[in-house]
Length: 321
Image (cartoon, rainbow, N blue to C red):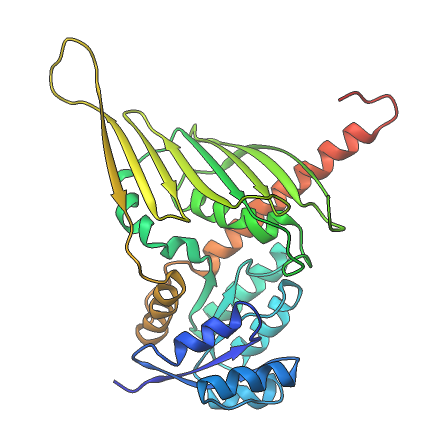
């Protein structure tokens, strides 16, 4: 098998790990990296034994696939340039800033017959491999994703920074079209929303309640699913899962059987990149396609619109809390 030549655009907090893994995954060859900071690029390149390219235009002729790990505000421009050059693209989440930008990238990848994958890495968390078979038709989903404050990622609000993970996960269970979105959010340490809550009602009957914060003292990444005959709890941090299911056998009174499950030690990003390389090589639909990323982004903007509406109502003269 001829290795695919991989490039990484942006080797900051996350991009450096893309580069590290491309250098290690069988079937890929880290052909080079580029970053706005030449000093940063040199440090990573020296560590991994690869080449630094001065800019995107210089890098692209030497690669088959690329990871776009630049700030969100630049996702569209960089991914578009890569797709236009005929390269398979993995763009970090969210796919872009606006839904129009996302749709343009999806259409361009389709026209060129290229793989466009979006970096919703939680889909590759090993705990999901053991928990997804236990999730059928959710009636209610509750998500909490809390983290401490970091300047990284604050070029967008917390909905596009963190909630987008859980929006994508909810949509992956095919709850149907959205019927109503209610949301509230406030800025705390940045100029955009840092804490938010959204309640999303789907036409199929499922309700999702999502809470995110990037100004919390404790980290949390939990996902709970309530179904007709079971309750599923997932902790993405510890990779532990629990299934509580109604006992099937006859009994004087209903009882609950609890099953504890544990995800493996595999690195989600490694699983994600391996999957991306396979899709690029075979033409198979990515696990998280550009279309998936666009749908998650569209729902995120519905949440942001609901937050804006809520804020305007409660800032009107005479409004009460």
